[in-house]
Image 1: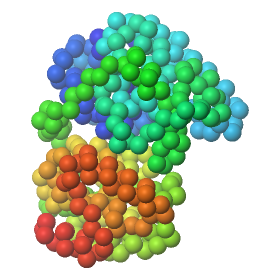
Image 2: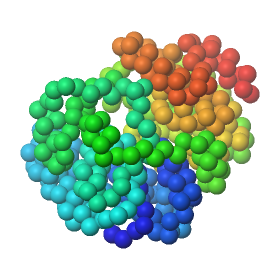
Image 3: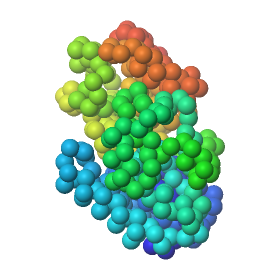
Length: 338
């Protein structure tokens, strides 16, 4: 693959940073490698960017309990490492979320020999990835599969594996484009109108079946909130991968394409955005939009996790997110916006 500049994109949050860099640097031949998330490729293609090509790669491993998947992923990774990326030399390469995306970690290990590798988003202590001194058997097996030395990390949701921080510091340089003015200009260039009248954007995610976080009254609490929202013009956007909950789909909300990154939505007519704890709430709050989180409203099994999520939202959003504790608090806030 021939190009002048190379990016690795793993999440919708990365898109604006990549577009900002392309605008700023003005290379003739950019290549964006999209990892695992095909929806991102679809979104990039609809932008019709000049001087930019795309390449999609994905991991095949879903469980370590299946030996056939282990061997399949082992050869899948070697194919990417030896055939597609081994001949790339003398490029500036920017990667995102390097620490825990194992396929990207593996390819970085190949590219670092002949290229300059940069990290596009800082690794923060507030992300709650705590390195462990002793690696588990699972992490050792993953190191074998992906061909790179990985380290065990403890996280608020579950234990995981990723590149050791010492490895990141040794081979990857910082290159952060975090200028809010630049990002806002990028958003404005690619705005997508979803409603021509005042609306509430509801970011709803199917979390109950994925994470064991909430008490048994979760659906009752959410039904109470959705009943309130049913009196307004509500636009429902699900998570790009997990979608929205079955409960939210039962209401008279207008559903939009979950593939659209929230930062590119036209918020001109938006009175407020309601969600739980996603990164999207932070991005939206920085755009000057009213943001309400359900964190204090739903009941968590583990109060410490609830506090961790809230602390992260407050810190990254510069305290611009509201946390009502009951349905009256939601109603009062929403009515004040309208």
